[in-house]
Image (cartoon, rainbow, N blue to C red; front, side, top):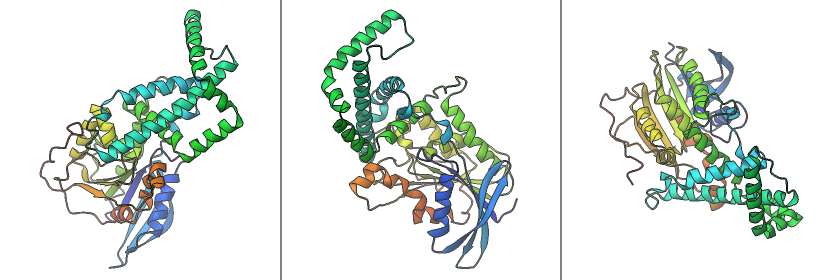
Length: 387
């Protein structure tokens, strides 16, 4: 093992759509933002099938240098987009999604969690707005074509369903008619463009499918299984290469959920130290929705191979929550970030995407290896369901 070499494995959030786009954002921040070091780009690197980018870090204080390789565990190509599906799939999928989130434990402790409550309510409003617009489109199509939709159901069921839908269509006919005009389309387009509607719906759908391990279209494995396998493969390739003294897992947004899920079970014969840095993770929300995920958070914190877990969060970021672990264990650190942000920046999710360029985050990523972790057992977590 080369003691002077370190690596970062980035697990991007749901906003990343292209391979290595998240790594490029992180690398740009590392190259430009830190003031007490000089970071220079050396070139591409490949190790055990994982492709990365090699950087060199030079400290101003003592001119010491070390190598830092940056990798990305890309997973965006595996997730389905509900908002891009056909109209019938959107209607049925949206109904299932509304039921999943309305009738759940996320509403417990509603008054005690201001930021979490704001996040949930904002997301639900956007989901309801999207589903209402989807239903109007559906009813508008139904009024224009009596045979729509053609469902693979018994004839009697189809006739009953279509009859019911036509009655519902009569109720929303004024809205459907307005939407059919150019003014209606302009109004709807403006609203959809001004608010992160599609993003909120697709994230809610992703969380639903992940927490329930919903089968993918191939009908063989679930979404959680597929995503875990992808992230685990990249992380194991880097950790077990024997090339690094420390590997820092940087997980943004929903990537934090996958990082915790993978590291809860991650075991390796390698002596490489593993550090976790979560940025704007929705972990408390997920723990309230699924009991098994609450346990995964604690199992991750208890993993002996994890030398440190730094959790960055911001009250101005309405798409994240403070991770529900106690900071009594010196390995587990909460680092709140104060942002001067407008209401529009909070609603649009702009504050949620600032972490990879934040000087406080980048400084933490460039910190030298900490002292050996205490042998004291981890403190009991604060259950997110206790509120």
